[in-house]
Image (tube, rainbow, N blue to C red):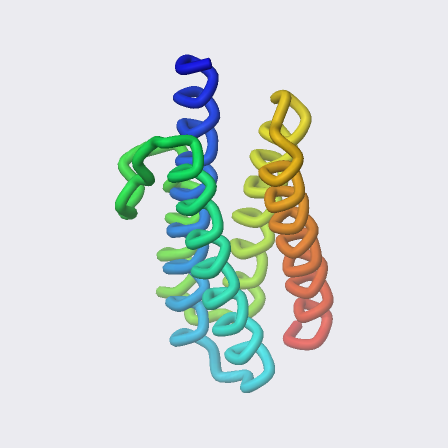
Length: 150
């Protein structure tokens, strides 16, 4: 059991890092676009990732483990939202949206991995599935926005 809870909380901590990254990425994206609707969308997503983070933290605590404090240390995780930096320097809304989609696609895959790979307690399963579905919607919205701004 001990090993199991530790392994679970490690997986949840990785998702937590991903949400920290996405929250920061979206916040920065919102600051770098002119389009009002797009700005609003990015801000909403940033806030949503913040609340996902809180939910993951309570789940990790339920396992009796410690949540990571934020600021991604795992290089590979961070990279998905890192390239957004170069998108910002171009200040091109289309490029920023493409990077957001890339980051979200990676997040969806990572959530799916945890959801499918593990014998999760129903509560954790529900939370992760809800997060994943919301991220999928965000990814779709980013695709739709691309048609508007291009």
